[in-house]
Image 1 (cartoon, rainbow, N blue to C red):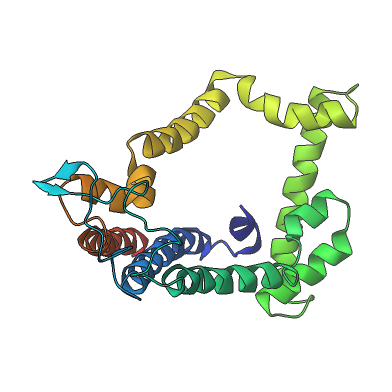
Image 2: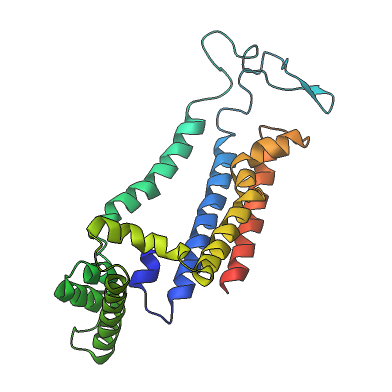
Length: 240
């Protein structure tokens, strides 16, 4: 939503799509970091203790209740997970700090009645002076749309207070079949996108590949990385 509000119309769709591509690219990088760091200090908790868990393809698997020696794992080091967590903290820290310098969207400022600030923000985002013709045109376009929406809501609900007006901004989607239809299409599309299990595969890919018979410590992580490559390639095709 934020990207859509601050971007210009000619690149708005591309930027929103690039956000999804960036997410899948980050997931891909995390997969391969997990695979690489899993080899630090070995891939077994205690090499001297044989696995005693349930059989998988005729071989016993790791049982965390019985296969860990007193005092903890001896075949792995804490660096195998500390390094992975450290890599994750760095981009999160950059995002957290960067958010402090991100401007309010011009549309939100306009809705708050801060029109001059909205114009200056729009000028900054477009990297053009505030009196530039294209900046002024976009500014007036946003102003007209915000004012039209505000006046239309006042005409539809003349006696509504601020809280009721806030509720009506959402209730209006249920006020007629065409509006509800658009809401339903968008909501159900996102619902079924998650319902088919793509997110579950992303988060539980090592476990899923392990249950399919791959080595849960190494090979399943490698297969997960390959899945990440496929995921990024498909999103790249969607963006282009």
